[in-house]
Image (cartoon, rainbow, N blue to C red; front, side, top):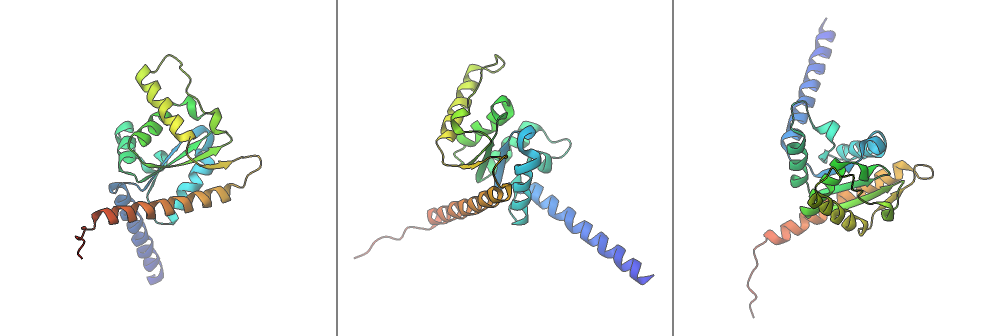
Length: 199
């Protein structure tokens, strides 16, 4: 009898701790925003990267893992982008077909976030915005500028037919960690009061 009560108490305590951790994560801004095309990469490289970063006690943002029913889509995503320190853009064959992917990328670039591109089954030169007549010209222009900027950032490449996904996820996580350390060090050095130079 005592054993089952102890097990039940332990289970309830663990459940409470998990819920508290999730609530704390939801209220803090994210460290890393994962920009991706769901149909291409959500169930593979992006979910693995999210899990890996979470295990390292970072706060990644991934729409289907971070958002809750009732959240306003653009408010939540745009807020996460503005609050993040690093953006990981996972480019894939269907990426440029998505208004949401391009919107997120443009906002990441406009917000001057550090961007880590991962070119998954696509070359940077293959990325282009296609005008399907449903997007205002000024949005198309911001999407094109964001893609151009992303194409000129050194990134990781991954081929699903030849590559090792675990290696790409580990390397990407290492780059994210180093980027966050650099950003924090820059922030600290800017906050230090400057002492006057004396002779």
